[in-house]
Image (cartoon, rainbow, N blue to C red; front, side):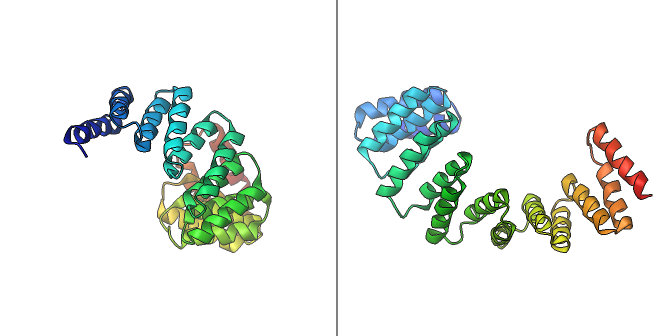
Length: 256
């Protein structure tokens, strides 16, 4: 690579990292004049246009990148993201389906397609796409999370739980994952397991108010009044709206 070209590319990337997209775009376009067969340069220029809110130009440059290199995964994801933000879900689906036909073993393309299907409420298609991600990358816990959320939405709580538990094999320090797993167990009438996961959520983050509130609710429903009062009282210590505090205080008054 020519030294001047290399230095200018570094300058362009430095501008981009600093979020100075206008100057980065100027540099990338100058580089394109020097090397108009470089798909990465068109992709990067497209990203600059997208960040500047010039979506028509961004789409044009992404398409040029794909024309030069139809196996450039990042460009397919970038243009699909552009379509998604414009609520052009079918266009996003179509471009990703075409990319997968060309690059069938790429998990990232299939995963993004699954997420677009979820946004379009095409849940069966989303499940197929996410299952195919796990066929390629069995340890992709993000795909398990998305599958869990789809199954939870569909009311298939056993499948939701199975996928959330897969996520917990890899991540044990995230209160939201324990909380969502607890909700799935609760919906599946497995209250003890729901409570166990809620206790883990506040063990991970003792400043997580939703965990305390839900524990109060489940202990009260189970008839464990002392435990219910304890967690409701802890919940009241958080900075929550006064209306919510009044509501919880009424519950505590009834428990007393």
